[in-house]
Length: 409
Image (spheres, one colour):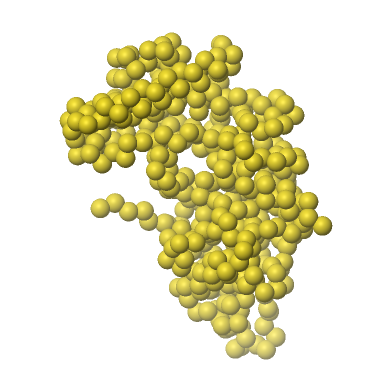
């Protein structure tokens, strides 16, 4: 049996762990060919502080407000252990879920179905982002902060026993940005996702202060309706972006389209193998052949951007944001060469098929679906087929939330 264990890690390690979990969020998002590290490097470059598990912008405020409640609890009750603080922390987040569920504005609520049994709490999902946006000043993990709050409560209680003039906690928390808007007096009662103008200005200003050169920051300065857009390169005001941002989007789009051919071919090979071993997969084979035809059409549409292009342009762009294994670089470059040289007949290319098969063996060893009948039997018939859009569903909602708040009186 395998499991995930959350430890006290660096922010980078924790972010990578959350990104790993992201790949299993819904059917079709799994990173079957090991190219997620490139996808995530683009996402972090353009939209820092985000993840696909995030839903609404106001959680960036709910998290620090919940921890401020936790500090007040420790102050009043003199929590003796980190276990006490951790238990109360989960209770506070459960109370927030209950409050959100009661309200009319709960679209995008985390834990709508699971409730208090939710395994990944909002604070866990938004923790890296609160640091990247400069909202959280505390550098450690949530469990480390629980211990820090408990130690402060213990030392405060000891000091009070020894001296009536013992120092008290500062009015502002040392863990959060000084400009953090105050929580509503009744929080979490009545909580919803609509940002006040003050809150929206704060979140926008945090992004502008901490990630001013990002595409996310640029989008937050635009009053633009993003509904109906399916990818960031479909932004209605694309032409108004800087050349740097347009180039990021061009390279991100090229990678998303070109690498999709590898994902579709992988699924076609699995459909063929399933038909060979178990039968009754002719329709599935035809579906993936049609997907490859669609991909070839997308490649033709992309042709003006592909003239003179090579994946080395991607490596220069994402730089040290991605820890790329040499085999990942080699696979990506080899696939791009194959795709650009033989788009129309890629399904009949023995070299392209061998490239995919070899890549799966490198990643999965004896669990390779192409070679292991038991693993093939567990295939969901749509491995990794969700198009790469670099967290756009999340980003679009975040931007819409903040822009809507800025327009409020």
